[in-house]
Image (cartoon, rainbow, N blue to C red):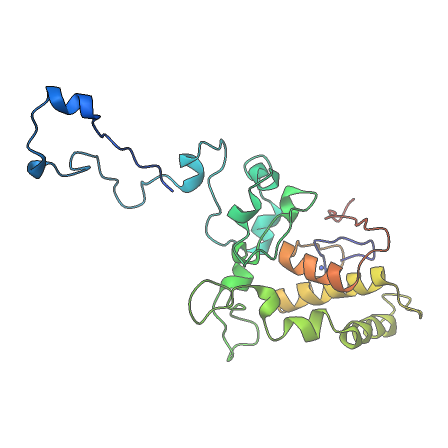
Length: 237
């Protein structure tokens, strides 16, 4: 991530149909109610064919989140296809980490940690460069990346962010001076998260979004005085 702030990071009930008869109808029809089985003639969906809740609700263009994809692939997401994520009321559809996300200015930023493969793959302690961070909905998985034991010490603690800034200063990558502003600390946090998620430094002018839940936590800890943030920027912006 360049030193222009990018808050998405860079080197950062189904309705039942009741076919009941009124009292007046009963007088005209003779039915053996013991032989009636409700819904016995309703067509059955094959596995995978049932419409999701959003389609049942008649929300156009909402298909629900798919399988997790690599962060680089999400950066190339079709913003028109995924545009439903910014519509009112859709946050609870795409945020699957316990309501920790918020709707951010661009579609690309409206991504949950459950959407990103680097975060949902199983942890591989034996492989420094492999494995993910274990985010998921299983009993042994993390509900949200912000609950990972390494997230707070790496991406929130001021001492860690300051140390990372000093390292950049020693390499001639950044001029660091006290007092450190919240903006500079946010930038450091975004870089820390990106390096942690990818298990490597991405290099100059390579930017990747980070999940909205992580952005929210970082902003809460190091807020902008005026509440204004610069959203995700491409490297050439």
